Length: 348
Length: 246
Image: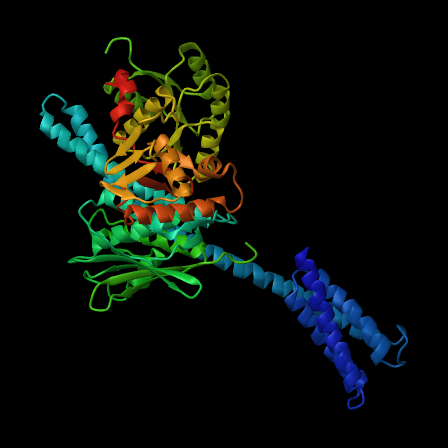
């Protein structure tokens, strides 16, 4: 409905402008020669900016009538007996149909390209996932079969050790799957995020509680504003982003001695930063890390999951209308930064 | 342990989860019944009258909230809901329908056992009976209901009327999550567009007065998007009714 109104408006605007221009210029030019050309251009423009065939054809019919009525002899009356008038009408119709056909095809091609890009991204992700999931699954399967097949020959201590490893691997797998579920949630077409005003302090508290459960030994320095701040967001997803970023630092920032979670208010935005002073970002790799294209997961430790973790973060932040970036920390290390709007956009 | 063990009903369609829950709960001294669908669960409930129900929200045959409402018509037995993460509306809906608590998959065994204990204890002593002389203690937090005094680590905390009411309400339901709406109803008698915000502001002040920092609040847990949960009490007077548990 909005689309139709927009098309009508554009058509009226273009045709009106052409008509006005011809009226204004008719004293200086041979209007009989210029008018049909101008209206062909107008029809072309209308076909270009609207979708489908209908508007272009409508514009060409209006143009034929306008040219015939106002700008060809006899002036200000309709006359279809002159073959020139008929011919210019046919030309305009032809231009309208051809342009519409071309623009429709162009739009379809653009859509297909966007789809294939999304497809490539999905394939990359799938590859990273399959690799990252296979390793712990193999370990779990191996440990369990070892216990089942050698139940009597393994002593209690050995069994317990194997089972502990199974627990650790399964818990890691679980978190990875949560990440994947979040991706399907935010990148599913047309699903609006369920944003609720979330108290920053409570979010940070929940993040730290969840992080400490997995990494009890790692201290995190917290720097957040004193004031009471609420930010519209899907709190579980943003919590996941922050936990992922902290976890990422613990796993990858070799030599880190200080891990900081800092939130500042800059204008109408809350800026979140996870700052470490470890080994820094791989040379030139920051962007590909965020896109989930990284092929280095295999080289890293087997628990890396970095490709998935970061591209999940990036996807979630983008779904919130924000942006995740990776930059070097002054003095060494890596900083992952993203922002969220403090106010919900007006239309919701 | 004899015959006076608590009887729990597990309603869960995933055989793997049901069997490990059964093993875990039996190992901890509970009697366990299992059902793999809502209808089977309802008929087991009617014939055995369990002390507590653990209900998975994603059952194939019926909506979980529907199950809760049906049970609530005839029984006040506590219901602990198992739900997947990132479905806050489902949790709130289940709590509003009459569930007593929820636990998010994947959960730790210790967490599950703690929730079960808290729900059983609350049900047995008929909560909200803060009689004269009653006290609540959880770690360094102490509440003297009679004198309306709250202290943290022995230091008295000066709360406003509203703040005290919130802390008091949460402590009477310690160990269980209270939704924003439930707290607002209890404190202000109703909910409106601004009541969650009002509650959050009060909560921020309470945290400030308690002197806790993000990540270091042992007394009140944030359940993002759902509500708040006060740490389980240390027992003391409360445990008198809980002997069946030990």
